Image (cartoon, rainbow, N blue to C red; front, top):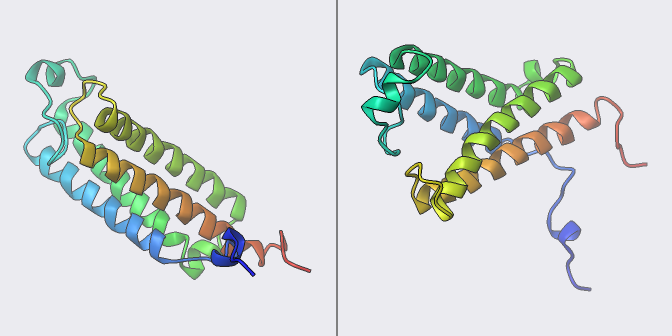
Length: 162
């Protein structure tokens, strides 16, 4: 008998490592944003440079924008860890799914720009390796959500095998 995709990959099994990896990436994002906030610079360490003209035309001052971005990184890490802890899994499922959907959309937007600019070239300045990172982050985000769904499905009586 040949193995099938469903035979090789247990889609009902919740995995914790994608959430922990996402949390670590969110904390790295927050640290990079905090470093640039301390310098009142837009951008990200290792990313494309942001011109002085673009910084001057930004709707917030650079330090405030970067501190807010750092805070969202810490919040994202907390949400990712909540998907694998008893406290987070005990939260109302609908609320957690709404928060996870928002997080996935935000991550997807940023990763999508990195992917398109890294592989196609939008003119932002991301390189091919940033595009690869974008693909990895999209996959991790999707797996974090899928694992949360699998872990909470049984508790809520949804999709349980008969």
